[in-house]
Length: 109
Length: 117
Image (tube, rainbow over the protein chains, first blue to last red):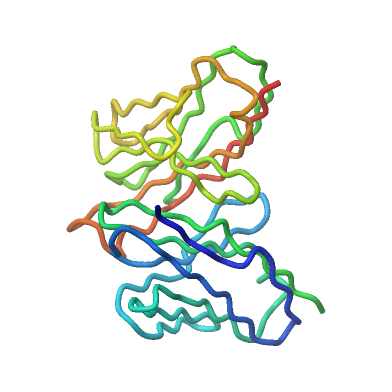
């Protein structure tokens, strides 16, 4: 079966750095997405990786290793507004998105 | 403003009373999809549509119907709602462009919280 694994919850301190991991086992691979979802709100797009390596976008970076079935989202200079759930999703060989259950990130002052 | 609009945002209903959740997008997107989100389970796809008059089942289609008569609208119909359909529902859309790629970023509606008693 297809599976996406992420930690359920993480806690970090304002101003620090946090890494949220995502491992996947899917039928084929056509890219990996990260979305941010604040409580009670819609998910919003953060990043897309289809080739191995690091994609940097401001305070957020996303890394992919296709051979290991692994990705991480790196958040730097954490701000209170970064408190949210972070969803990892993989596009499989049928171009369907397989979603992880999400990682709830709690930022403490 | 480019957006996906869902209605109603909140609804409490009773078992067996048919209801429709509307979804409309103003971005001329080909692809539209319905998801439900339950604690600890992540987003699960109910139905999706690649274009007008083309719909396909997702992972959890039982108890739901959809239609795609116009490009902008993709209503979700619960013919006979049951308590296990209590959930947070999201409609989403994306362009298909040259095919599936990183351009297929989903734009989500604000969500519809449904409670079936």
